[in-house]
Length: 109
Length: 370
Image (cartoon, rainbow over the protein chains, first blue to last red):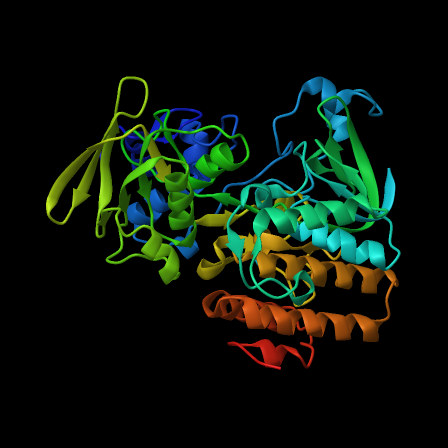
């Protein structure tokens, strides 16, 4: 496939940028995300997650079952800041939601 | 807000679960992000077979099943929150929902999370052009919005769902110019459905080389074993299968497993449809991509488990009812999916050192009768 083909449409990240990130040591979706912003747009990797996992599998030769999913965070859907704070105690976003999983912890079975 | 059972997702699994719990006397809240209940059942105008016995014998239209569910929920004590999206959880474990104006927590004793599945994209040069959409999006346009998404179409993929949508597009007057399948034969298992499309050229062992056009789809090049084929169309539908929705489960600290035949990664669960978070149950396509009959039954099993845990029904009744549901599911679910599901359940119970009920052996590994 043409390396200029877009994979993450929200952030307009193409195949070449993802492969370059892997050449630079990225191994997981989250590594690629941090290097390229892939999956950091409005859809929060809902569309590109599996296409990127397939590119990782092909590049590394690993089976898809071994390619982890991205870390998913709150809020789960686009929401206005005002909707987060309206009616909540404390009046700031941090008091509304605390992250329920520590950073780096995985939810593997 | 406070309730016994909170159900996230008002599709077939969530509504069927809500009705089951309501009948047993539990207070039930259903939150759904859409302005209308029914989820993806809303635009399934085709005839569905293999529905649970309570829907009567013979085929029923998906939209008819949807109306039944919505009417029954309307006549029940179930509290429905439309246009309410689950956006996270609080530190105390309660689920947070937003109506776009404010965010609030719902204190519940148990949750059933039934967010459904999403369609998988397919990446090829030009896939981001307007006019390229999933088969499900095209189906929403014709059946729900009554808008034609194009005049001439290419369908990418030949599974049951893609051919059903191709048939529906055809019957709306859209010419399906080609069906493109990367495998060496049509995937669809429904011979009658394949027959309705016998005039449509099918390219197997083929992929989309490129889609081009000035600001929208105009031209598609298909890579086939006999060389490149070119067609002028204004619609490309992608039917690359479905995968279970994961986000709400991660936020609720549920663990995940990989099971290819169930759609890839999904939240792990036991035979009671309970996830690794003891207050969260799972139902519907989120628990593995399957048919509508099995989607309804997983909702019922999840609800029965939650009812049993909350004391609304006895353990003996729970076991009896769930045994009935699993037997019914084993009879109507495709063998491949059932096998993957029972394998995952056996692994889960072994890993967590949980006993399997006696009825498990009767459903394991294939169809059972009686």
